Image 1 (cartoon, one colour):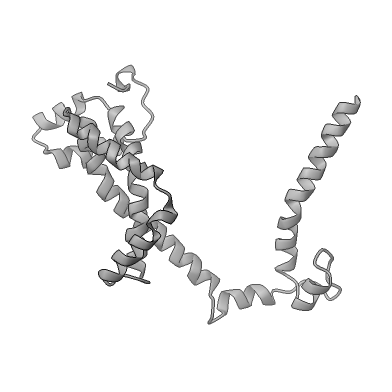
Image 2: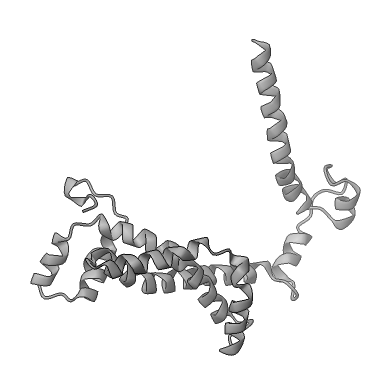
Length: 202
């Protein structure tokens, strides 16, 4: 074995050890007492492992980990649903539109990707305080949803453009309106892999 391979292997082993050390500390210290964590953070406790920290984290009145993860899951679900309800029809109108104004709207929305989040903190606080949603879950949902609008509209528009316009015409012949066409035909097809050559971007 050449010296270069030995050196490369040694570097990889060192990098793996550096990356695995925090994970090892996290897992082992979660099952140690406070004295064992301070005295021997890398060692195995003499009295054995304990579940006291896990039980305390799950039942603490000051900070309940289970409730925190539940709130996070609820927040993520609410933001995703609200973002889809808002950006889906908007992206459909932009993708199927033929006027320059539709592209202009898309470009205006995409400019939001280039605005640093730090620059909008003060305006967001002012707006949420004015409408009485400062420090509330609905206010946080609205703020997070607004942050996702530029990216979501861009992705939805690309998805809709990959779907043949013939589906819209067929749905219109069957009596479906624009909203019905989007939610019943276009939206279920977004992101679904197509094996037909006709599903390319028009």
